[in-house]
Image 1 (spheres, rainbow, N blue to C red):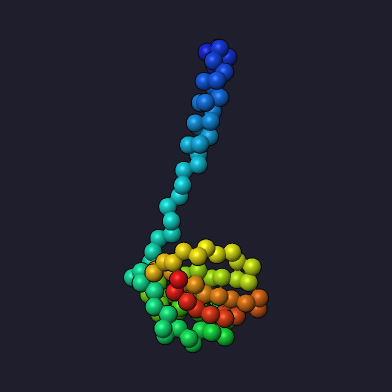
Image 2: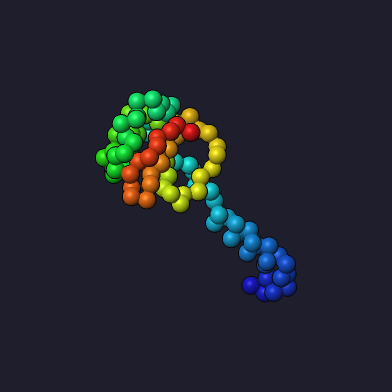
Length: 101
């Protein structure tokens, strides 16, 4: 322990390295469907409540690997993913649009 007092810079660098080791990134979400989203036949969902049953049905019917509910105040990225279904929901929890993006 006395060596840490003699070398304060080394102690600071060691503490910094150990704290960064705790910032390991986690893997992304696991894709469950075939991975290619198709929203052509999902028009039935517009106007329906965004409950769990409808969201599961949308995920299965679209073939998407990810479903991304987007509320009125949700901030989104503009990246395009072929495996993602975005479900746009209004303040009353009603689906307003369904798109693969």
